[in-house]
Each structure stands twice: as structure tokens, then as C-alpha cells.
Length: 121
Image (cartoon, helix red, strand yellow):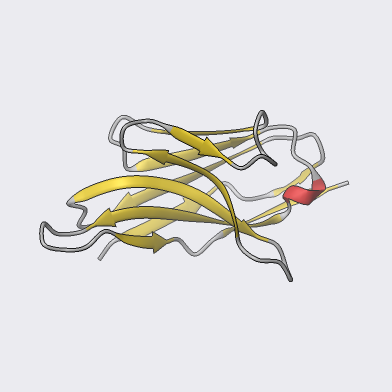
């Protein structure tokens, strides 16, 4: 019943900015962390950024200084502010949440359907 809804993907020129969002809804007993991964055609999915329930953040080296991950006060909506976008940032961006929907459940990774980010040169 957990659902992740993404928005914000678009076509932009190099140097531009985008803000992605991901809202988690449904039965959430405990949410440990949320994050973003991306996958370009013919390449493996790679980690981009993550934020824990305590507010600590982590970034891939390729996006440090350009991307910022954040959350709202409810801690169920996550944002990725992407500045100074480069063509190599072009990929499908996937929202991920690490949570358990019940008190007896195991922590599990849930994924959104992905949103396309295309950066033209």
C-alpha cells in the first residue's frame, strides 16, 4: 500500500536547474531514510543522494556542490534541488524510501516509477 509519487523531471539546458519531489503515502509505521538514484541508458543504476529520518545527508561525489536533498516537516516528502545541470546528469531519477509499513514488518526499500531528466548541451 506504500506509494511513492515523483514529479519535476523535465528537459533543460546545461547550466539550468530543476527541483524533483517525491511524496511517500500509505501505511508507514517507520521511515528510516529516503533518497534518489539515477540510471542512464546502458548504465547501471547509481546512488545520487539520501537523507535519513534524523536529517543527515549523503551525496555522490559527482553531484556534491550542485545538488541538495531536503524534506518537508512531515518527513514524508523529499526534494532534490539540482543546480548547474550537466548533460551527464541526464537519466531517469528514481525515488527510494527505506521503511516498514507495520510494527512487525521488516525495513524494505520501496521505489517510485522514475522521472526523466534530460539536460541538453
